[in-house]
Amino acid sequence: MLYVLIATFSAGALAFVISAISTNSRKRPIVAFGLAAVLSLLFGILIAYVALPEYTHWAKGGYSGLVWQIALFGLVVGVVFSGLFKAPERSYAEEEFSPTRSVGIAVALLVLLIVVRLIISASTPPHWWDTEGKRTLAAQLELTEGHGQAPDLDINKAIKVTPTHAKTKAQAAFPKDLNLGSYLEIGEGYLQEVNGKPYYVFAFQVKDRRAFERRGSIIPGYIVVDATNKSGTAEWRPLAAGQEIRYVQGEQWWWSEKLLDRHVYFDYALPNNARIAELSGMELDDNNTPWYTATVMKPSVGYTAYEPKAFIIINPVTGQIQEYSLDEVPSWVDRILPDETAKQYVQWWGDWSVATPRWFGGSKGLQKKVDDTSLVWGPDGLMLQFVMKSKGNDTTATDVIYVNLRTGVATRYGIDSATQSTVAKIVEQKALEEYKIPMEARNCQVEFLAGKSVWYCLLEKEGNSWGVGIVQPQYAKAADASKVIVAEDLTDAYSELLSQIAEDASASGEVVDNSSSTVQFDGVIDRVGNVYFENGQWYLPFSLRISDGSVLFLRITTEKQSSHFIRDGDSVTVTAIKVLTGTPDTVIEVRNHTYPQGGS
Image 1 (cartoon, helix red, strand yellow):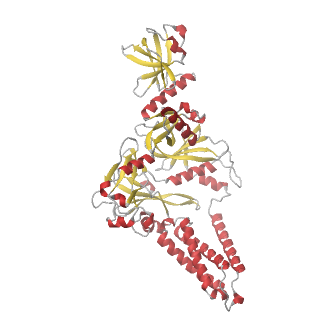
Image 2 (cartoon, one colour):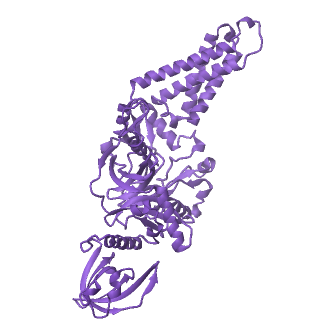
Image 3 (cartoon, helix red, strand yellow):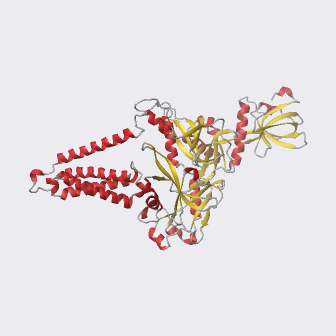
């Protein structure tokens, strides 16, 4: 938008100069301004062609629409300037182009512009007052209702590295011996699935064009970071000689044909009047070959809603552009639906899916807005997650929507919880209380673990991934930091979550014998130990000899009534929490058969 305004101002300034210096403008102002309009049009075309190819999708109608707007707005600016700055007195003073007439022409042109835009709006839905058009926008999201719950997150493939830490790792892996730092810099990490696991892929950008050209105008490789291993290091991957990356990103050298955006817009997009999205990231195929990928976007609902119409893959070595229809995109591509488009679709759904026919929008009490977004690892690979909250006074989280960026299909699950900012706050509070170290909760998202939806945050300390925080929705809504689980390792946090879920079930009187996170044993108490304190709880340890002769080492909180009726040699039935290894640890319930009056 800024570049368009610069071009418009320049065209208008040209129109002003022409009108100001032209004697003919005093005798025939219409002719003079007609000439100014033509020249400002040509000047606008020149600006857009030389400097603004990547912005040509901004206006309705693509490139031609942009030029039309530059010309019209430029002429308006020129007319206004001519009226404000009257030329010196000349022999044709009685026919001077007066400020009043100048302002009148400017107003007339603006009215004409408004009329033209209204005609376009009236013929191309949706209209800002048209609820049916709003419903059409809401339907852009191919939403399905999730029944039951989503499959559990695979904790071995869960994302455990924050984007900030990933970039720090990538910078540490920057090949010092190649002296690339003199002219290259690392771009932002592009999270993607590579051979079944999530990775950040870092491409390089040019920061010194002249130095880049002196070094042969090539980039010798790229960097990848395993998103599942917070203690791992980044990997520098050099390309073979003759296969170096030559088409790159860098705004400071827009006139070069090797600039990626410029190359794509000139060689592909301009003839198609298309908007190109998601061109900033580099994706790897199954053979770890790097490619630039982008989605071809065109209007589908009037000129308001854009949707994917095709897909292109750019060879970073040769610059060759290959177009694919949406059903022919190679399987290794993760993102067809751009992030920003997905967010726009979800927001339209939140705005208008339940709107009532009213001139100024739907029922505010039913509207929802996007709280935050996260790229998450799900059962279908990489997905974009949206947490929705109410637009009214009650801003609790109400929905979780998963969007498959390859297919565009969205799945909604209901949730009754706090917003992401509240979750991050209580996770940080718990981490500070337990470890006495200030940390930041990043990328808080809703995941399914142990058969339940939970908040899952990445904890970051001084820019490095430290561990994870997990909190169940009911505790997040109550802002109960004491129920937050923080741990350096997700496996440990998952074990604690299983314990918490089972203990919650026991405390609420639910049947826990058949719980997937519990196990039950009959046996004889072998030995009772001494009470000890850990993590704010008092525990009584004891060993249980079961029927096969093996001994289990267990513990029970002293808050449980049955902990006061445990003696050496008693015959008992124990319901305990099953941890990841399948071995019970914390006891939920002890039913004492030797001393039945003790209850359970």
